[in-house]
Length: 112
Length: 110
Image: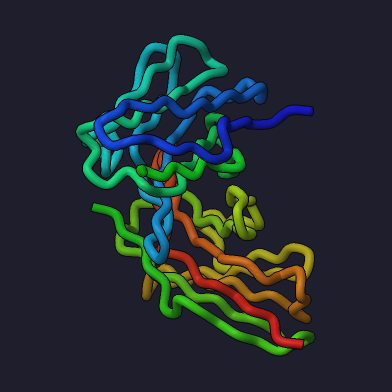
C-alpha cells in the first residue's frame, strides 16, 4: 500500500540531546513537509522540500535541521538548540498540482 | 504574510443535526482552500477542497462554501454522526505550501 510512514510513534529525549525523526513515503511525491502541532495552535511549518537535495525553512525552523538525500525520505533532527521540543510532529507529502497532502501518523516527542 | 484562523475552537452538536465550521484567511492570493479532519492521535486526512474561482463544492455529506469578499470559508457536515467527532482544520494552499488554521474540535452529542 502506498503511504507515508513516520517512526517512532513515541520518542523520549533527554535535555541537551539531538534526536532524529524518520519520515518515509512511497507515493512518488516531490514535496515533503514537517509540521509541529501544539495544543490549540494548529500545524506550524518547520521545513519543507520540493525536490531532492533542496529544502526551505518554514515559520519555526530554529532548533531543527533536515536533509533530503532521497525522494522518499525527509528526516527531521530536533537539536539541543530547540528550547521547547515537546510536541507532536507531523510529516506530510504532496505532488505538484494536487491539493491533497498526505500525512503520516505523527511522532510524539517528549523531553524528560 | 499569510494567516488562517477559525471562529470557534470547539463546537458541540447533537447527532443527526448539521454542523457548520468556519474559517477566515488573510491573503487573497491563494489557489485552493482545503479542509482536513484529524482524529485523536492520528495525522490529518483530506476531506474536501475548493478552488479559488468557485464558491461552493459538495461532497458526500459535506459542503464547502467560499466567500472571497469577506475571506471566509466554511465546512458544512450534514446529519452529523459520532464518527465525525474530530478536530477540523482549514488550510490555504499558496503555491505548494499549506497554511493551516488552529482547528475546531467537533463533539457529537448522543
